[in-house]
Length: 364
Image (cartoon, rainbow, N blue to C red):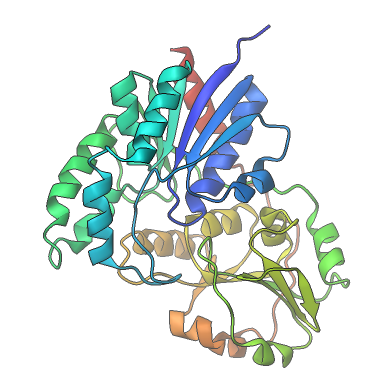
């Protein structure tokens, strides 16, 4: 009988994009080897219940393993508060750090996987456990944009750069922002669908020839204030993923809580168009399922230019402004939404290649 691999997973809680692709990698690892996972993150536990189900064995530890950028809302961040948090966090002396160090010391782990969490990589150095970094950017690269206005980022960048370089394996997921000479490039990593697009659309819309549009702001939820405008486009069903407590269908609008019974990749696959804020997870899943995207990119966030470049290269995106999105001015551009066909070549998630590289590191 194969020996169980004990795998620690440290995930940034900055949005859900890091969580979505790490879940895709966890699922692939679980298919290939017998695994027991310990997941360390401040992403809500329901997210993993929703994405990993009951077939994957894991312990969940609700701890902060990364700061990233402190968000004011889905589109803006606070650099001053971010700096305060970073200076304290990167001392690696807090309660969350001590708790994680204790868990890693008490149990024999084969590997630590980090989706841009610097704490996990730092703990790898302290414990001698091999570490695999999954990234399409790292925070030292992101923060460089803010040095001119906030010089204190310089010391933080220097410390983070040393931490990220210490990873034993660096998996770079397309579209990555800066090529590393030691990086292993893999295709976009996205979660897989569980049910056919026809079944999902029939359940939500009824008529397969009736357009369905998914609205999203990623892992940082919002409340939409343009229901009345959407009602005027009665021939289109709008699925609003956001800050709702319950699933509700009102005329041609479906309000969908972040924590719902629907598998989110199924919704992306079934939609004829996705509209909203573009982050890595949304872009990768639209690419994976050939779903057109009408989106806005975050201002003053360095990753955005690379996401935009990828979207344009693959003819995915019709760009709109944040103001246009929140005011629903985009409705004038979607009078005739084409129904998405299923006659596209299947795209493979980079999770397969990423998981193989991680297994090689464990077995090496």
